[in-house]
Image (cartoon, rainbow, N blue to C red; front, side, top):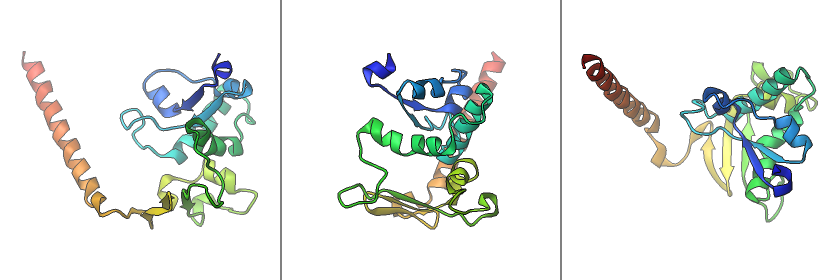
Length: 184
């Protein structure tokens, strides 16, 4: 039905498992020509929001559940994390050419965890070894938004500290609420 309807599926393996939703039949959907992309869902359902982690997890999850190490090869997983999302949103992505969106991510491939890094291993290393912290530059629509692993827009300065403060504040409220519940 999904294929006939031309539906798109955003596969969020971490969120599906964390929320107890089960394991999506991604290899079967892909065999039936359903466009499946990868996504993180929200922070409550996938705390890290790291697409590199999602790629590795999706690859290993479906290999493990199928018992077939050839299911979802690295090239297919990388395609699900990039081009398939563009297809779902009807955005032309995946090429560097005049008229295309200037959306790029540069990933450092010189760390020990991505070695050996030669042309034959780049895709496998991106899917199974790289981490979000390996991203050194991100360009969106021609604007650099991450440089040297840091957000460039001054609006985000101090965001981590503010987020921590909000989180601690929320935890304090939850603790107070729990104490009141236990007293009753």
